Image (cartoon, rainbow, N blue to C red):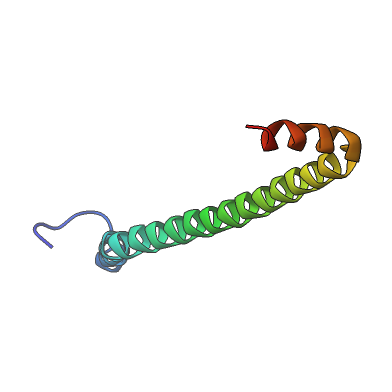
Length: 89
């Protein structure tokens, strides 16, 4: 202690040790918060990627179904007429 005060020396030492402990643990807590925020962001990114893949599969299945339905809906007469025009060329 630099000079005598009216405050008890033990109280002053306790406050000083607490302040040093808070200052010393600050960087560790900040790094822990950084790791936690980064891992949460990476988890959300992986979830978004999986959701995008699922939606792509749904769209692919829907387009395949529409294509097959269109092929089945074409009558054989129109197919014959179209191919007969190609054969004469």
